[in-house]
Length: 514
Image (cartoon, rainbow, N blue to C red; front, side):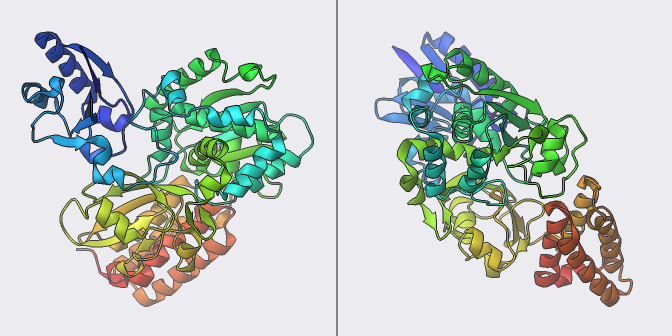
């Protein structure tokens, strides 16, 4: 009898010893004479339980975690290979783990379930069903489906995806491009990486559908160089997709074509901004372009280009498979569908949480995150990356929704949620925001290039007790200048965390450093 065991192969699990756990399981199976089928699946996104080992049983997959190599012998002795083991690491049926069961996984329904590189696994879980539908639709119908779904960009700007596609679709026929922004540089974010490492065919499918929708036959994934595992897994998935006829000429006998390749970035945060990314793709230094013209009209190599984030494109297969209304039925207001939120920082249970828009930050941080890892009181949370505002407790009961957050100066961004306990120095966090911008600015516009440097200097003077009132006034004026005068969101949003500290944590900013 064959025993099937799953051990994740994504970056987080590997960093926590998943390869050693897999090797130890093989050795234990040989010693016990067990016919072991070990599948390297993707992570479920429950990072505090990694490496999460799962065993197939007649009742479903049973989970154990976090498993270290030294735990394997005791797990085997407790009956791991025979079914459910009575062991301190036993978690019961995987699908019944509350953290996972309470989610609404549309985009991430397959991660951790399948072998990321198995096309058969992908197809068995409705993979490529959306593409098969799209191949039998005209391009406008595909665009209309995305518009009707209410999908908005998941990279930060939240621009309606279907409107962007419509603009490119309406441009005259000729060379057009699909560009995927996989330069996931926001603090505390990892959802893009999980797509590429745990369900890569979903992104391939989404980008191919986008190509069919706007008349593009070439796509590029701009991947951050700090993701070597994603790079390896995704390139292998590309090779297999070509061999299976899901990429290249005459896709699945349809007469339609789409080619796709990965290009590595060089570690510049600014290349997460779409026009800077396009310059980098063209082999230039990543510099922000003035708009107009928009990339949808004059983008990569001067041609009409769809630039979407990984999560935006990864949502498309579900929409084309289940229909736009099935996606739009989730969410609230103008924020439709689900948002994959990523819990990080000082959190007890860090990981991926995919839910419909509308959950509050407090529910997310307490019900899923379990509070702080330190056990101390939570003081602040930053949502939306290093340019997002620091939110005090008075704002934690606001629903996570683009418009609701905008009302109080918050940003949803890419869904990163970084938690801080009461030991954090918010004045130091304000300084970090300015320093981050001074390092990562492309340098093209003066408010960002110079403003961030002056911002660090002004905050240092305030922290040193030098003319604090006058320097606070100067910092206020400087922030307003950066917001109103910067060419892109890098300089335009850098003041958000600083302003939030000035408003909600003023004592931290003016308290002199010891």
